[in-house]
Image (cartoon, rainbow, N blue to C red; front, side, top):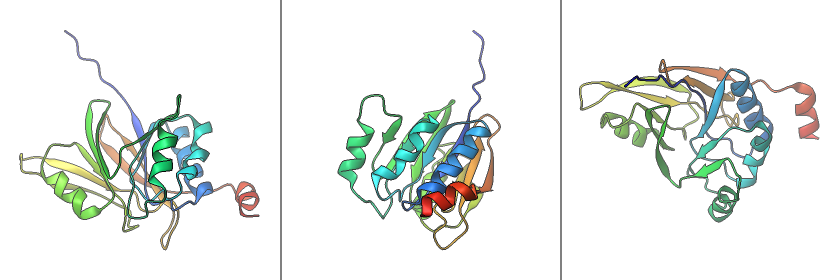
Length: 187
């Protein structure tokens, strides 16, 4: 029996707060850098905000935050045939590329879940403070906790995280928007 390594890069975002051009720019940049999936840690607000990601073609794993918006509509959009959006509710446990991942909006909840040792990666948002750290867990190891900050640029610079699930390396990135596209979107 041979073991096959599975390589996957991911785009981690949170707190888009309906800022479509910034969300789109972050996910497009991440895809250009090899991301194969998007993890959104809540505060999308209007479910239709995610529509800007459809042409990019990456699977999107999303939870809600404290600014829930229309959860019924989020569920309807996620359940459309052929959709790439998976909506989990208030938190999510999932596996990508053999890595156990937990998504939650609140950092204190993320740190608590990281200490269990049940996950390789815990992602959160809420406080708009971009941070990558490891947390000691009760199984004697460490768990990565990634807060990508606010992709919507709300009271903080617009940021996202790019992660490599093979090497478990994570990097915070600034969102750069094409000025011509941004002017069109703002008018």
